[in-house]
Image (cartoon, rainbow over all chains, first blue to last red; front, side, top):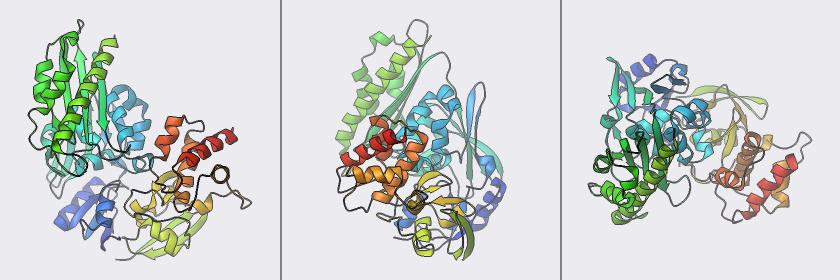
Length: 292
Length: 156
């Protein structure tokens, strides 16, 4: 099908984009890479009178690594992240999650900001942002604010973004020390929405005790989630004393809104979820152990 | 709500006045008469409409033509050898039974052309990942994978 008619705006600055959004209210929508929005428009699941294309705003592009974190402009494509040497070394979890997104043709257009703002609960980047305690920079007519990932995702495809807000960048903290990272997911076909997935970031002390461990879950609720009970159970535990299967079960226990549809029942998703958490923990903790 | 756009398609400058909702795929087919770019699903799943936008393989049904303003587009028609003969990738598809009905073939050929340009010696796993964004309902893919392998070998 074809989208309904809309007017197209291509602002050159973030300020211009925000003022266009403020002017047109809920009749306007931000267009980032278009890999989720354009299908929704083509299927007429949604329609807008105005699309504000961020593609021409150069200040929204780029990857800046500093000592403690990496700041990635919202319009940086997934392909650019995939190719980035800085991301590979400073943010292994983000680097490893990227090839799971769609296909290479999708990643050539899709952006990190678009993925976060679209907030699909089965998407990889929202779960990674939550796992790494990322901070999201948002510009509105009132100015710039920073929202932690833990407060950004508010519901199914819903975020803290107001209709006149533009997500401009995401700042991801870099983990140092004896760390390991893993993403595991199961999808019917590579690149499709995952039935369930898990991300793990773990840091060990010199004696292989867990100093901190963050576990993200995707496809297992209305938003990406953190498996806080499982994380708590891992704190200070010696790697050898951890029952990985139990961690997977613990991660699923508190979940209350596991989706159930033709791709899989809630019960099935919980079983897949427990298995991917278990695998991701094993991979990440093994990597952390091998680290100097 | 009409807009003027100008882009280079297969080396030729194209200028047109269009509605913003016109996709790049429809622009190429209807305004440029380049019907080699096929439309299967029109929502980014099948990959039949894959073209090169500034050299990068993209689904032309998920790009509005206004977004390609000032940029360079290469379609399947622009991939043949300078003498009009088949490109190495096209030749390999023919030799290896990489197509039957041919509907998906333009998308595959464009994707594979980009894939081999960026990675001239892909592993089997990389070939499969690289083909995962294009659907074929006839071949069972084995002939297509053989074609990519053959094109990769022929190149070097």
